[in-house]
Length: 300
Length: 273
Image (spheres, each protein chain N blue to C red):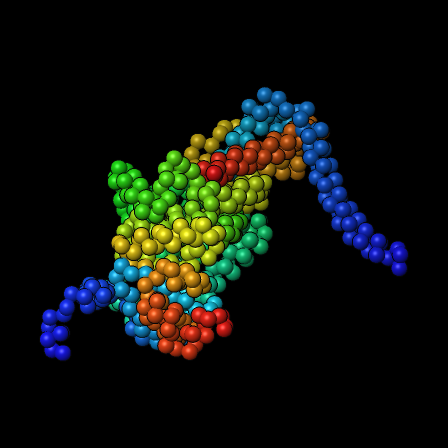
């Protein structure tokens, strides 16, 4: 009797603590490995030039540029559509209607679809259907009917739609009912209430969704393989209809298809390091924006 | 007899000032029933609100007094299962009629909530909100109305140097008067107050009550309260609700001193509730 209660209280602490330590350890190993082998390869030349000699030398600038362009374009597309959908679901749709249920089911199913399927969807829908349609309609020569920056960004946007919708809806739901009532009782219309009271309050939460989308978008390779990322391009994309290089895809290419594994390895480490850094910086700027907005709208 | 009616002596006139002034009915409920789904929360209530008077609704929790209040500016519309039978008239017009726009209605009938609910914006923006959603843009005019409203709500002196400060940084009593100022800014005809002082300390409560007394010169007020002393202090008319019925309605003084109904008497003497 004397031992048992102590053991039973120590055991949960021990197990949960151990598991947490394992997780932390894994993260530390991954990050320190990347940092250790990656940072030594960093140089201005590596960051500012294109790959050379079958990607066994040179830099990764086109891939950095492509990643940033892709993620920004994806964010611009996914945030407005996701937020508007969330506003509909949270503020207008009747919870009990079959349509609302169908939309909710679609959103949660979308979140469970493997990313390679999104890649194939992008190829089929955006490129072969939409892109080719646009080319025909405007009599373009093969412009949008091929993999390019625009369609890769759109595919990523669809992939991240559930993240943005769900986090926006959460943010909208957290705005107290009191504010809605106060606004409506002052003769504001529903839309005025949403626009002037609810959205400003929910903005930090909405940006959290955008941040999650950015993190995920910058790391996904499968959806862009068929929809726009190029194996190797000596130049930067100049239009939405150009192909582009992307860090994640570049890592994949170098890891699987390098002619000289020995020569590629340091570059690979450097690239992974930069990919993490770019994702981190994009996140950081979104977090900074969020805290500025939070201070402006909810500040004292 | 006939002579006396034709030429009433001045003493009679003076002792009955209420009958001398013309009675204007600002709002009126006729056989109003309110349902949540199939549950009846209000049962065929008829009641008149006289203009520039304070009408208090008292009764135990869950008696339907707040539901009744929220039917008057159609805040109950926000509850999907809620529907009404009967009529509510504002200046003789049915507020549930097809041609009545609920947004316009709520501009005419202001509401103060139990929990003060200023927006997390500056004092100025809180009071200006109703004006802005009404489409007012002239800065000078907005500033003028904001100042006037804050003065009428007896909070100007406390906030005039802090108009840019977040409304949430003020005390509960100040926030509630700020909410009153916000409601006054759009010049409603009627102000509905749902237990406006129940979360406040005695001093803040006294300020709100003084304010109500001042406001009735310009507005018609209905106040729901748990506090019978408060009803007795601030109101001209009182209605007693019990289980969705309006048990008794009359001049406040009469209702508290010589209630006609046994249940009213039991409640005001503290035998239940």
